[in-house]
Image 1: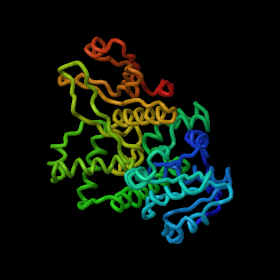
Image 2: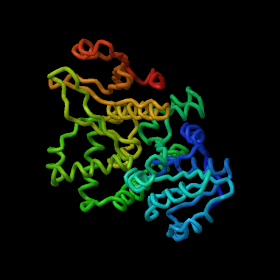
Image 3: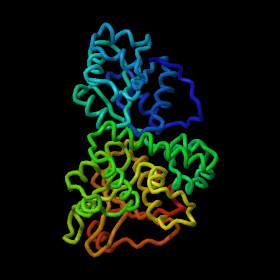
Image 4: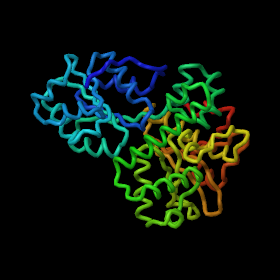
Length: 383
């Protein structure tokens, strides 16, 4: 039911809020996706507070009972005078797409915002009924860009190692002690990551699912062989593909495909997997060691930089295609961006100022730009 919108802990300016507010009352239902604990609820509560709207937590049984109807007369009673209403975790409501469509079509001037922690559950249930009637947005954990805006570039730079170990979920980021951060991340992993995913998806082998996720965490940024994964977890390739798809749709991991256009030696059918939050990744393998004690600093840095670039592109409304590049003789580039017919190549080296870009790539794609990103010039990727 509609509730008080008092913010209980420090909030950060979320870049996405401005984009969403710019689209309010323009005839489109707004669908906001993002993993649990990324700040979706606090973001929409700020909008509700600002526009004097109504907020409904769809995980509460009383709210489910109120929405267990399709009568327009009954549904209209949920709408405030401001005609802005938020349905948080809307995927928990049966026939949510149909109900949102009824509200959208029958109430003039109504602005609906519906959030969901599973893109499959929310978008699958709502997108078809709302075809042509909705705009979709995604909220990541805190970005380095948002942290810079809050505390400045000097302080933000000093937090990079912490972000690579504990991630950037707002609640975790706000905590003072490492012990509290570890406990919070363990709680998120156990109570949200696993339980929510198992709740919403048809996963018949949860132990296999967890083992697969652990393998991805240990091999973050490495090329994935479906055959090898299938053998390691002892299930079919089809099941592995299904579980990988579920992990992506629930914002736990994302993948990059290999880039290939002209060279016979290029790898053309391969993927790498990265995590939406490195705190979650480190929680899965129970490794919160400081950077000086880690063997995986290079992979953490690669994941961190690609993720921040992904956030920057998304919030800047730059719809770029992201790839990695490698040849069969082991020449490689960490990230390739394709946008407007041009290519930009990135190499991520944590504490190195030297990177040799493959000659065969520069000769074949001679209009591509090249950039090395290390711990000294990280913020160059925010442009």
